[in-house]
Image 1 (cartoon, rainbow, N blue to C red):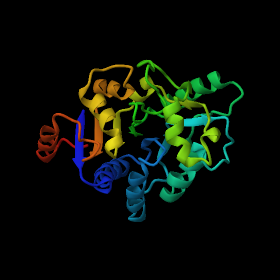
Image 2 (image 1 turned 90 degrees about the horizontal axis):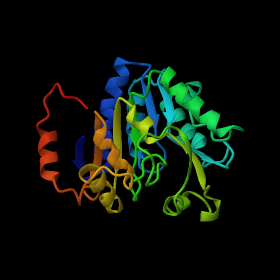
Image 3 (image 1 turned 135 degrees about the vertical axis):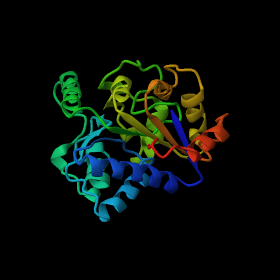
Length: 259
């Protein structure tokens, strides 16, 4: 696990976007795991600058992390809509190559299995983008989620619904269920880039990075990942015990040890 700390979220997004752009130049059919919400927006803006500078995203394949159950695809807060407007269109991606969990299928269990199959057939996710909830959830894998879980239906915790209510007219409109990639699915990604900004994420970051590996903090499962990078601002890093070491490691990275 590698921890990158910087004062501004834009600086962190630039570092991550530079890494992704370099990988996409080498592999135009790169598979990108896409997260939604406000946290990854600085990254997508930084990637847009690379697209404007000539990086071709037209062959990049995408798999969204999760989707709400119970709202139509055309709803502005469906993750299909959000991915289209915030990622696919700005970066010039081919919408036919970008997939969102099929949370409106008649047979949700079978659809979840099919989503797993699509990821496998694409060769797996090269880099999965993540945020982390204040309760430590990644994707919509709430506390007590199985570390072996795959794409499935989950019930959103009341706190998660409250956190997401800012995107809706009222909390009553926030769906109670979602389809999300599981923790086991996330662990299969070749690399994970997790972003966390603000003091309200400090406990979750400390628990995920330095705490015990426990289902009560789902993000802590990333301690088992072979290549997980946390991009955190000063506030989100404020409860880490080893910040000076993390800074030292990043400042002294060998040239061959790229993100």
